[in-house]
Length: 181
Image (tube, rainbow, N blue to C red; front, top):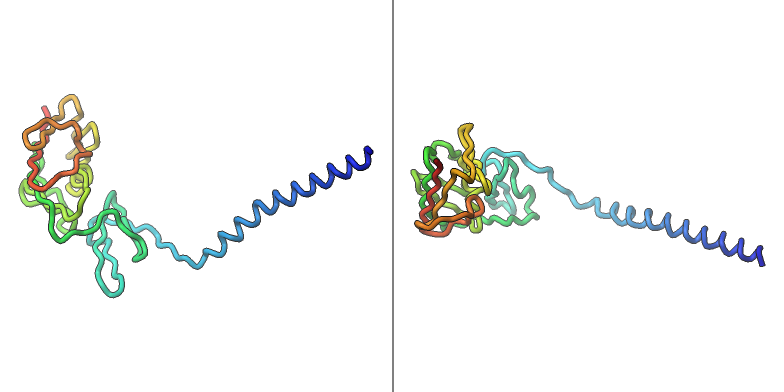
């Protein structure tokens, strides 16, 4: 009886080891068959113009956000599609000349005085101001080496106080004012 128990425990250990080896080998062989898929390296950019792609001999406008092109191959889809008709609104930020701070090669956001045109939907104020080299997170506004945070930062949208700050998604015709004390 003791011999059969030892034999049985040896068989169980061997089966366990075989299952363990197969558990590591099979997934790695499945992953190696997908080596035909080519992935593109992320591209560093300073403006939207740096991110253009040519897909099926057609130019594709790609957004540059946080100094990285959001898509790098024709197979990728962007959350921010370029729209021919922009969302236009007024943006007043104390002591910030938006057109001189922005890059003329940016395609998705254009600044003309205090008028802003955004050529994509669902684009937050945070991302819009990034195009003017202004950092606007949920608590602070930072540009030209100075930072103004929530205790002295005020934002109104169409004359009403707003606490959304950088998370706000501007709508057509909005008048947004950002001030600080």
